[in-house]
Length: 283
Image 1: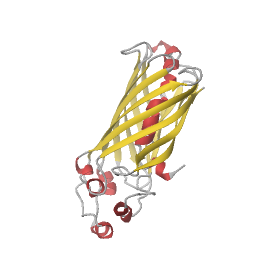
Image 2: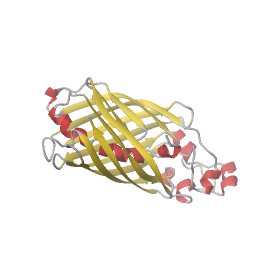
Image 3: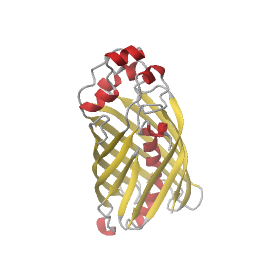
Image 4: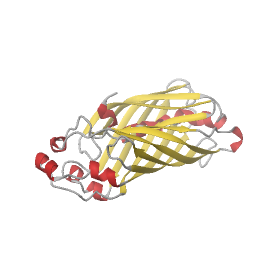
């Protein structure tokens, strides 16, 4: 797995929105059935969160359900839903369970010379939980899905050592049995340690990088928000089984004191653009 692949969570989130497409019709017809969808592709993403330089990286995502226990990836995180869905729920589904993930932002392959001079950062291992609610059959048909969730994770590896709260909302609808569109929005609220670790610059860092000293990101707050859109087209079979092509695009914006950090405002850009193409296969 390439280290640069997870320098930002946005790239995998793009493919994750698209990966939900093959499962939608299958979920609606029999939400209790076992299933598995795998996705792989290439994406263009910022070299670190807040960078103004994009890199091309590979991506892999997963979604499935076994014996009523669902799992899915969002960014470099894996979610497990420990509440089995029931066919009698009328399209409503409450999800709750653990989350495990990691953050390798600025651990390696930093393209900007000034940010690279600040030194490599340690990886973060983020563990926590999530709760969400989804409804099948909302607007366009009996097969569209609207979902909302909130996750809370904390770094347990001593990197930023902070808590991150991420609300998210996603909507997807099949246009037919062979194509699908989906959109998603999410945001990150981070604790005090996050800004100190990724955004602040001390005197030694300033001297080595030429970036100004910055201590303005020591508090908690809303760090960023992102929006993604995806289109999927079945190549074999249909959206419930077989191979599909997907195309995804997205935009993210960093906020306030995190965007004001010289890592972003001088060496990077608060506006972040992402794109991806890939294939999914549903069993």
